Length: 430
Image 1 (cartoon, helix red, strand yellow):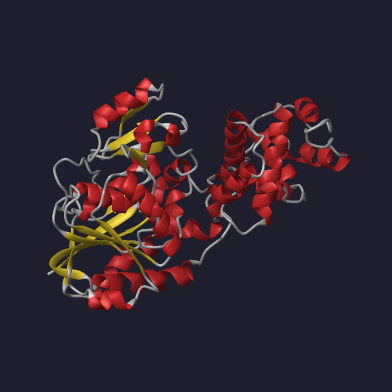
Image 2 (tube, rainbow, N blue to C red):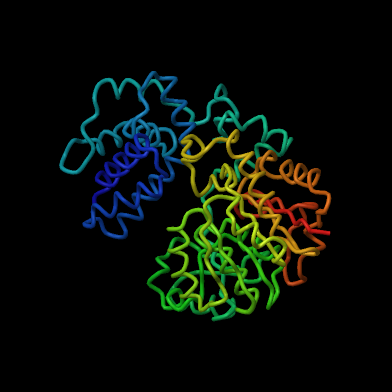
């Protein structure tokens, strides 16, 4: 593809993302599946350009609004090229030439709006939350969380997320996995906190590697790996991953248990659980069972009360901690809002707590940085359940984890820890 053809593909993708109530990665996968003639290098270039624009969406949209220009993929990319990429008017006109596969020729009204917005990408009169790509409805909450570090923390959320892997100790050590990756020309290094974490440079296509096929590595952010460590599961124990989803944390927990004992992966989405079974098999783990649930109050929960040593609740949440990976989630509300999520989280935590044995551990986690979904949920649960107590995370983790000191809870951020924005707390039944 020519550079102009790549830009046209980017415009088409963003138009689809603006017009469809689906996540950006889902739309992008479908777009490329329908166009198998696009090669891997071109796919990578188009995907990178698309995500760059999505990470700048609120700022670009602000400029369009100031110029009374419509919010379209074409206008967003025109603004992106002029303001963020600092491309000249003549260079933009050369790309928007109207030749085969290139974007249509610039119209007079487009030339006019480009003239109106020419200048600084983040001008003085742009609101701070827009400069920081912070959804205005969350700005007040996050200012309360971060105080004078608000700008630094939010700028950390604007960066591209790294590619983290977890070495499967049932198959390979981390050092050997790194050496094998390097043999394939992939730059990799240990992550600072997780004893199994590997941080990779670039975006290599890992599924083609034998190391991946034989279950030696899994793609998993270091923060997610740390949540699995907080569960503290030991060989022979009975464990539940109550909101298992695709099974990433389930895999880490089962490997931690040395394939001994039992891990029950639960979720209300049976199809996701079905797909996770392939991951469990590839990792060589057979101590995992899957259990579809009708809802958080499924009858199985009542029948299994107080039978488990460890229970993980990775609750559905706003996803505000993973904006780097899902930049469209800042402005595209695909799931329930906080008014629906908060009571759902409370109900899930309350129901899952029934599974915990006396002396057992309940870990509540989210991929959110909002206190409503994190500390406040835990405080409410403890006030209503005096038979549980909070365990400070630093005191409850093993010595092989270099856990960052964030107080009684684990509260990670891209700016300080180079992980996604994960929260976790450890609650123990007395």
